[in-house]
Image (cartoon, rainbow, N blue to C red; front, side, top):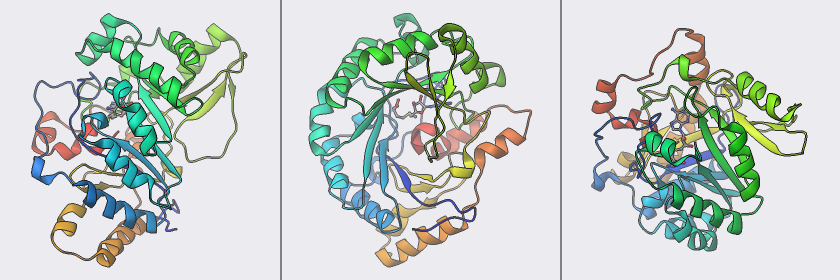
Length: 339
Ligand code: SAM
């Protein structure tokens, strides 16, 4: 296993399988138009599979399929099966908005998907519509029921918390999580690329989330564990466990072992990185696999990114990437990079 300049191992790889999404979440894709990656640039499944082999040989053992909305990628179970078949892959997960999940979940599980995270920020139809510009909340609920059936104990719900928007629903979401057997994780609103409407005023911090839930449930006890997982976990008096991902107010850069491969083969070592490594060009340009492996090793060993910590150190802060820059380079978008 190789480590970077700050002694962090290369372990977690997020594969974005498409930059397209069927939602337009206010904190991720609030603009009217987007420039999509050219179709001919998208990696074929065989290309993704060859790159995954190289990553696994360098120590990656956890893979998460994401996007954009991963369920929009045609024949996804086929790719899932290709990745699941690799002996070095110990954990295979997926993050989805759940709309297309009920239809595909059995095929994905049969192909080797082990765990699932479904994103859901509100239980209220009117809010869902305002937040996502979609009426598909009932289908998300169908997806949640399917996840309850197929992945008991291996199912999480991720909620981005936005002050003044859904911060009055935290306990309702925990109760909903209980009803479908999912662990809920609250994500602090991040100023990632694409979040053009971000401001500090809309961030509900980890401390505020804990305070709110303590008021409702009584003592909220932190669970002490040593893991590279981004969420810090807590227990409620009735035993319910939930998590908080506090990337904005208390970043986890020092233990970040994740990197991201976009659907068109750009490899990013930090969610906030301005540039990535073009593995598609290497692959299609005839660079042999030993040389691509050396590129991966070299880049990881030089990695000293601490994007979220550097953002925090700024104090005063506004949206990370201006709209003009996002329009010029869609790779700066969270939905392209793979959330
Ligand atoms: N479409 C899939 C989904 O909805 O889960 C996968 C991609 S989405 C970009 C992955 C996760 O990133 C979602 O849970 C989403 O809520 C989160 N996300 C997007 N923008 C964010 C932001 N500005 N702050 C915090 N989380 C964000």
